[in-house]
Image 1: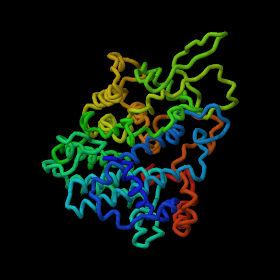
Image 2 (image 1 turned 120 degrees about the vertical axis):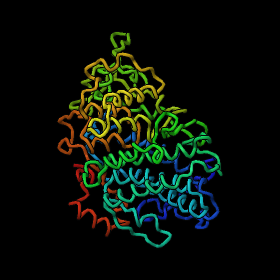
Image 3 (image 1 turned 45 degrees about the vertical axis):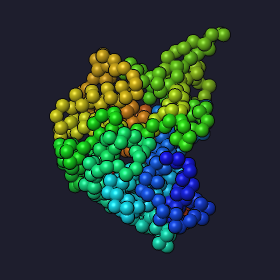
Image 4 (image 1 turned 60 degrees about the vertical axis):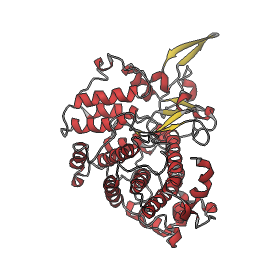
Length: 482
């Protein structure tokens, strides 16, 4: 499918959300356009635009908060020092609302066409997008959002618990809709390309996303998340989940227009950025084969010679001047962003880490085996060989703690949208070092402020929600946080 040929015809339809995005100049659209499309017309644009946006924002936002990379040289406070601008989340707000609207339109078209499998896929896409949106901002307009066409221009903000209850119910519904024996009406898409297992793969993604979100809210004991997760895991016939690399949700970016890397200039991926010490120091301790995949080697110049010193980063939110570093630190390996590449959505390794956490907490057996398998898949899925002695080290062997699992999960989630940050907010792991130069009293922000445009476009509802929060406060906790 030629994504760009239809992109401009459909993307703007989402802007009818009105108060939920600032791009009002794009709302001059043909209101009848969506009446002539099939559900699959919207499928590839949603997958590509959200997947590529997420990968880019992982690099530009998440990776600075989570000490994967640092801006260098720079005296600007920025995200690595927990200095969040008022509009830091505007790009994700606008993108998520735009493509949530398109996912809802796809769902409506699938119902109209009596295409139950595509209805399930549309629901899954809608939940994927909405979960990220609410986990970035907290309470957001959801139930009345995207209804500009119904003249509902000022939607109320819905609390996270209500949103999550709806998302989880939607995933349960989506799973029930799949008929994996049904003949395909259209070609596969850019996320899942095998027609032989197409419906099965999407159903596995749906149920694996269900696991991710149940784990996200597992601190809210009244929601019985662990029991609900076990009901999924223990019934693979009713609830198949991602169980191999083939069925994982990884968007393969081919480099063939329009399916291209989010970085139009590959040099921008590494410009004024270095790898963070925390990220590299752990991998050095692990003797991890992912080091050369993620980073370049650092070096010093001695006389006229360039002396390589291994993988060495820069301290995140470092104190003092840039001149204190007498070496050229490791930077990002641009192979991660150059065409062709992959934008991770929900990987097999993540599913295994979910199981490992359940086992560590006593809900499943074989915690050590699940931990080892999760780490192994996280490494070998990158095309790397798993060292036979990897788990012989004190830094890598299973020690029975959630902290050990989450440190390895942190690496498995590298470049997966905001998931590292979300999991840190849920668990407090990995334990990140602090410096005197960090703002916000050295506390990791829990949320992004609402975009500036919303403060004027949806002023009354904005004022109402922040009055409940005690202000548009970056330290206000997600509903699911302890």
